Length: 187
Image 1 (tube, rainbow, N blue to C red):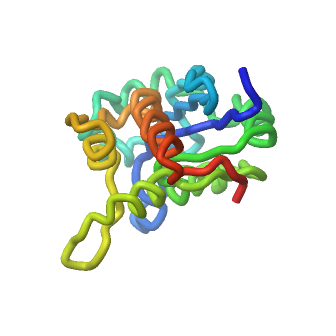
Image 2 (image 1 turned 90 degrees about the vertical axis):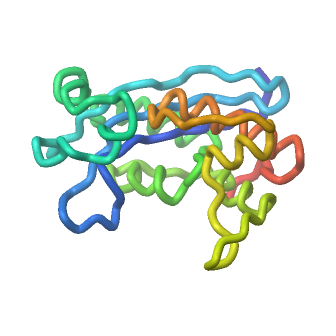
């Protein structure tokens, strides 16, 4: 491994932070370490999560209707995020961390008590800057699927499973890094 290592993470959740109807929780997380010089990826974390407070009221969450992750899988196999607190925080204290939507993903983790001393540029914001996809409201945020198609000229349908998604998001980051759009820097 080289010195240019980045953690790319993805979380799947029961909803959005601004959803006032219920408390929202992380239900899955995947992390890949990317070596920017060799372009190699290393699996760091791939777990179904069951945070304290997750319950029957989350049975109809968007993620369960739009992926093959099930409510029962979270209830039966999910592990408390607190079980991984020290291990994950040590990684976050050591490496630059990014995500396809850092505000969303890191926001959920910050709400759970994690800190990120070395945040990298948001992959989604870098993709949006490059693509400039127009909408009736101006430039829109580039989805993972749009970024993938733009960069690799082939369709990709997001599975909304954390580890699969983070593998694709790390490829997007690598492509943006090669283009000079995503920069290895702490922000």
